[in-house]
Image 1 (cartoon, rainbow, N blue to C red):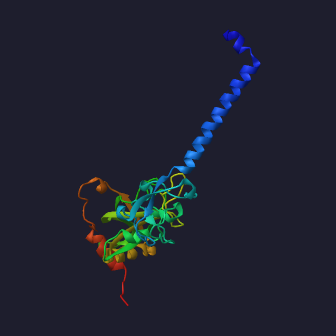
Image 2 (cartoon, rainbow, N blue to C red):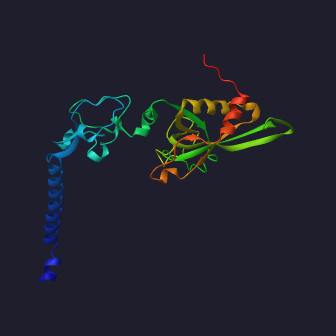
Image 3 (cartoon, one colour):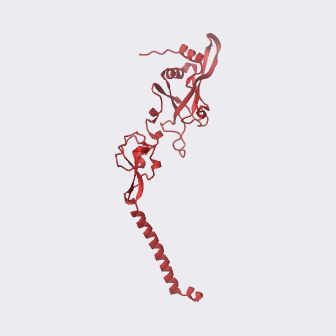
Length: 260
């Protein structure tokens, strides 16, 4: 009987059509359901100004039909909370969040102004892949700044040959940002290889002036060298401070600084 049924072409055709109709009905029902069932998405509970951190109290959830979800709408709260409103946008109260309007802090053009103490001054230290130990210095790391120079005078005594001056100058400097030559954060997009060109950190104005003096000692072939430390692994990192008073005195002896 079964063999006869399997060899009946008309029956096989009917069964095939029935299976095809069932499959089509399943996908049609799923598509209709997906287009009707509401989706829960985050929205702004208050107006959010450009550059503002999107904290948890600024985010609510609402249900909307899938037909309202255009391309770029953010659907998960986790993709919004603790991010920032882009520098060129204002997110209105009641608005949904969009990919183009929500960014990481590192993507804000002026993000570094958020990260240093009052009374401190930002300093840009020129670096490359070699001086950053194969691109191994990250934002949040601590570094020591060494000074290397060449001079014909050592401890007030003139010498015939130029001697190398080398020592740790400033210690426990926390890195705020590592950027490439275009000012883009080096570690933001790991799929895009970016070469480090500058390390950004903040120091008291006195230290900034000393660093700038050291930087401009071209006749002494001066060089500021960043050296990573393990301070960021400690519960209480050491204080930012001058490491060598002798280097400080030497810099002040060979330079002049006037306040206009």
